[in-house]
Length: 356
Ligand SMILES: *[C@@H]1O[C@H](CO)[C@@H](O)[C@H](O)[C@H]1NC(C)=O
Ligand SMILES: *[C@@H]1O[C@H](CO)[C@@H](O)[C@H](O)[C@H]1NC(C)=O
Image (cartoon, rainbow, N blue to C red; front, side, top):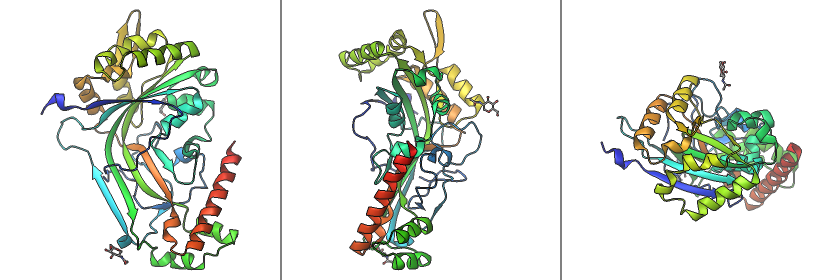
């Protein structure tokens, strides 16, 4: 086993840049009690704004291992949709293949939320993160980002640093002959163009979106809070020093706190209290007169990454990415498909407005 084979990549995002979600996930099917099922169909509206309650996308402080509790059903006729799943879990103790540092620089809390949900895409929705976090107020934001509430409300800038540990991925691709199971054939047949009630019935009885791809695993993250001046200093520093070069990255744990107003807690997407505590201790840094957990300590430190991986080995997965696509693909009648898309779009826009 070669410790040096650990891959630590660094990617830097400026919030507000295009959504970086990729649909070309390699793929699995983890041993969780409620896994994510590629191709499963769901109804986006009932929990719109609160999908974080039915999908494990933030730390929940429970010890359960569900990932996806959102009601969903098998709608596609199995022989007409191609399913791919892949697991990255290794049986031995060797290091996982996927440990990447992702750094997002965000101008405000909204951008922070947007960045957190960077790998979540919902077709027909401009702001997919609203579907998950639209209902979050200050206490939820503080809790999920590990911040003191004071730093959620004020005029602050944020740096979100994450290490994603991908364990499995899956995707579903409807084939050209894609259609529904016999028990939904009538819904498809009786769908009427220019009839809103027909659309709403279809959304309710069949659904609006299917799971096109997903990414599960665990993640460790930490949010650093700056005032505008500190934020500009960080941005300058990062662009000056050729950022991605690890020799500079190694200095970051010691440089960044110089400008920081508030350092959030090191967070774990899914881990028992005890595990989270062990990880925080492992990531603790002593610098000048302070002692604090800092995620950057993992950078370029294969041994530490390995240690953290061991702590997380027996913790259940959470959802790291999800792509939902609209169910319009099952309408072969172009007029029906168009009407489905139009009414879905209109309803989604209403929901967005209602959430504000
Ligand atoms: C998690 O739950 C336990 C037990 O209910 C509680 O003691 C602890 O304070 C909670 N931790 C967080 C971070 O909410
Ligand atoms: C759909 O197409 C695939 C690939 O051509 C084929 O294997 C499958 O049997 C077809 N299913 C039906 C129900 O026609």
